[in-house]
Length: 147
Image 1 (tube, rainbow, N blue to C red):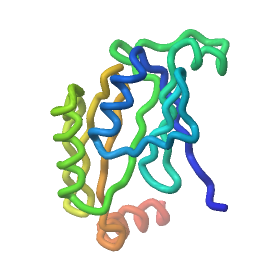
Image 2 (cartoon, one colour):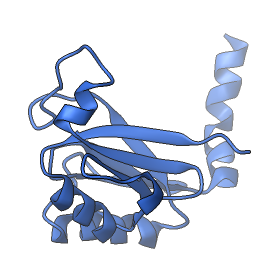
Image 3 (cartoon, helix red, strand yellow):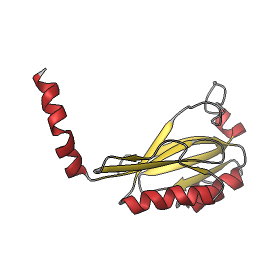
Image 4 (tube, one colour):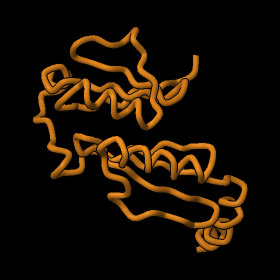
């Protein structure tokens, strides 16, 4: 079985958050949903568990961060192309989130944008040409190895 990642996010309005994530391309997996949680599937390996604050609080003794004021985590997901990066960021903005709370990144071999969800959680979406990235960073790796 491949390793899976479940990003657990506290949300203030579960129904609105679920609709937002569906709008940006995630699929709701009803097997892991109830009145306190929605399991949103981005790929076979990547899931976001949207949890009401009461449910989230069952998993941590710490105070829930206000993601609109503080950064608790930055989540980055990869996509198949530059067009996919743009499409997801634009869908997030159209669904009530905020496209590009962080500067766009374009390094030629790597392209990324970000979006902020309804609760202030920031997601980065990136595409990378791995072969070109290896060539672009090879001189830097050699310089470091020579030091």
